[in-house]
Amino acid sequence: MIKTGDTIPNIELRAVEDGGVKSINTYKYFSSKKILMICIPGAFTSTCHNQHLPPFISGLESLHKKNFDEVCCLASNDPIILELWRNEFKNPKITFISDGNLEFANKTGLIKSYEKSFMGIRIKRCVLVIDNLKIINIFIDESGLNQTSFDNVYSNI
Image (cartoon, rainbow, N blue to C red; front, side, top):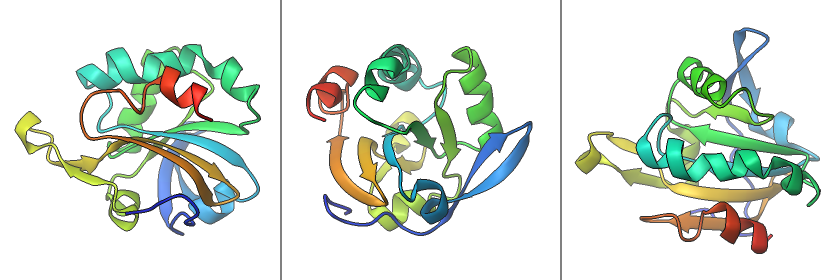
């Protein structure tokens, strides 16, 4: 599993930009930036939608004061679903990125079975602090929101 000091994988992800689905190369997109990446098991799922992501949206201004260039939300849903989810939150200044083929999840080892919830294999609930392609901090929850909550992440970055 990826750990502090490791470099993120060089892969293609997807996002909706300017009304169309665009490819995002992780090395080009995250190079020379400090990124907070919120990884969630699924858009519109009860915990992600109601508890996990909303505090990060309301806390965006305070995150930018900690010198983050960008806040991203990564999920295994397809980019269109993630765009609909972003719209549901009134279009926050968060980039919603699709790992639809679970390439990021697999290459980082951040993979988990959610089969009991009928969601199949997804990325683990985690938050990554990435600075110029390197992981400088990682928060992972196997269950619940103790490590990956906004309050915990904010107070430890």
